[in-house]
Length: 206
Image 1 (cartoon, helix red, strand yellow):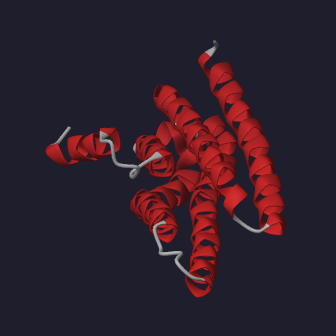
Image 2 (spheres, rainbow, N blue to C red):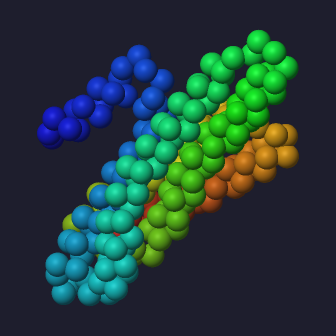
């Protein structure tokens, strides 16, 4: 582990509001991408697992891009939350300022809802690819794949919490939409993770 990694953890541990849960969810997803990419490389590294070569090559491209994207997702979440805090600090000494402040709070709260929602969507997409991969991946690396699946699920769940905490600050119709959609995402994530874990346990004889 290098100083940059420790620096990120220290930033999260500080008394500052960001990075917070949403950013942590994105970074957790980044770890999931990394493990899936590793298992993919270990799979294509041997002809014994040739049935898994095609999906492995596909996953390597998805995950290597995903690793970089996860950092951007974390930054977006931090920026969105900081904008919410700035909106609440706007002056409200007259009707014009009150109106502007209200509109800024509404806009920034929507952005702060969307940022973790996208993280949940990305987590779901990765999880949807893992059951098939679990049945074809290098058997010697299946516990790493199981870990990756659990991390992706955790990322989605954490992101969903950050969606829900921001919905009270947005329009009711948007609140209903994002609350409903993120619940569906978590339900699907649960199903994909359970399928992956069952396949892995079966292959390992557990």
